[in-house]
Length: 409
Ligand SMILES: *Cc1c(COP(=O)(O)O)cnc(C)c1O
Image (cartoon, rainbow, N blue to C red; front, top):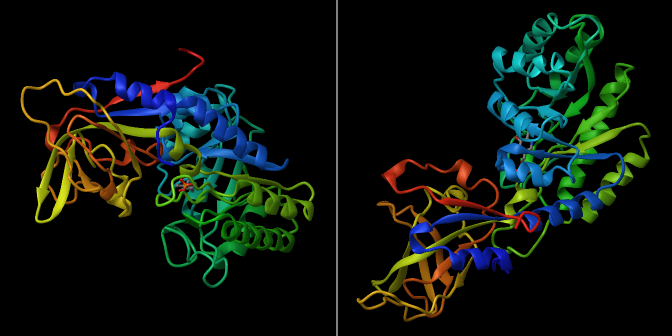
């Protein structure tokens, strides 16, 4: 289930205690998973990777054969991704883009790189982008997808773990402003901006049927908008947010079902390109946070295992309020002269080294016979893990990083 792949397990056992904790990424597993996702999506659907889920350059490069491009959400990500996978198509999203960030994104023209798709979040941002675009060489037009905060229907986002749309919020343009925006884009107010279509990323954590229904609503709404303004709808980016179920680590988002639903949407609209931009559901499964049990203790009827590291490296369980799935990798030798602490019962709560009761990685995990010196591999640690964590808190050492790749071993 959450057991590490053979290369991850092997490396976890080969590292010394002092070389732990460590992030262990199985790049072969990532390549295989991304290729399967790509294969499940029909022609006419482009797959972008949302870099904020995990921007490690080795992951960005391993994904490259399977993806059509990358979604970046800051000037930092833009520069980082452009350097890690040079020349690949980009989409530049995110609220509060600064003039300097927009300028950096537009400067790609000079270098001959294609301009990113700009996911414009507000009317103000359209004005700033248009003013900056006026400095581009003559004839260059800036591809724009306007992000709208759509209401996909009552309860449509209810199953999500995070909602970014469908109600009051800072993301995207209110649909009540859509006609005015389209009029302005068509009447020469923003002469260098070229409208390609719409973008909507409304929720994260939805399963395929719910996400397909949202995509259907977004495409219908966008097509009606374009028709009212007599402009072609060339592209609709229906966002990311494909569910990752931390309670069922072997489950996978139904990419085949989702792909079939998108194919049906496209069949009715020749010439339209759909784009999806998952983050979590692409990289979560390829990463493990591997560590060593330092101590096992009994406290008021429960058992606790303290591991090297903690939620300052793997904040995901603390921030999402779940138990991180994990597997014990037993180590038989005990090199120390002092006795080896061990668990008497079948379950322990796995905690880190931080002096806060919030530093819990997994409550009541099944760990029969767990002993100090055993290794634990926390699964689904490839996305929103290290890069969202508060590394500096308590000044413990940083984890190691291992990118396991059969092509370079
Ligand atoms: C975060 C984000 C994504 C990726 O979301 P996941 O839940 O990781 O798939 C895609 N698009 C936008 C605009 C985002 O903000």
